[in-house]
Image (tube, rainbow over all chains, first blue to last red):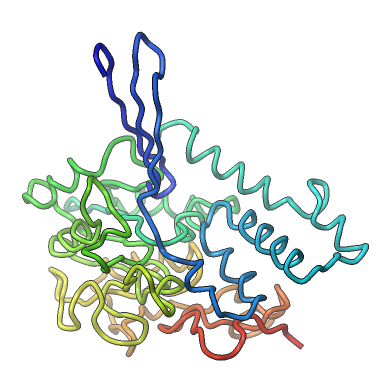
Length: 118
Length: 234
């Protein structure tokens, strides 16, 4: 980019994502992100028992594990045309119900990605 | 006291061991003890570093920096010349392989680093392997006969994730020269099932989660077979 500057940043949660940007006149002109890790969980889950997704997707990420499990749970509910029982609904709702894990995920992520450099 | 250093690499995993070490229950103090009391100097850690790994890696490779303890977290992607886990346009397996050659002790933190773990289950799209095993078969990134500079194979610290106490104890044990040696799957003696407690022996997972144990300290973990992985505890 003429007259610009190119930057690159590695997030601190393992570094499986890279962020690139072009700077021009003190502003971000363009930005890209690149996932640098592929493990193939989708391929591994294909043909498995549906409930295995609950234990497996949690292991995608040690920071946002709950997000993946909730997504897998929603997918299973959709696939099975299931409606959670009355007590199950609130348990999956945002705080103060069951999605405490989301908050934990977000807090952990915030500290690692935006916290002070030691 | 001679200069002793620690370098931590994050590979194909969930960073669960790092999360356990830096967790909210005070375990971070264990890591700080390791640095302050035991005098380990932290060369690099993905979540704690304020700079790129490259210069540190070169310093170790060129012998300007001594590497005492290398901790690796996550499996190593070997398929397609490592293109499923890359840094700087090249497969990251090259980086960890070169650092293993310089380290006095190499610790595989977690089931994935030791044996491949979740992503090594069939069909293992990324060619995930552990440092010196692929599931329970000897040989992973490194061949079965490989030894670190202190003459030891990979030290397996299996679990999913490994408790912070166990991680720190394993590092201290390695620094003492790994007295008593490893078990038949290359594991350190303090490796124990997750969620243990004083009330019951063995794995506390069924009681805590309602699911039966999936064997996170075993080399085949999570051991995908023809049966469902998730089985509800009765």
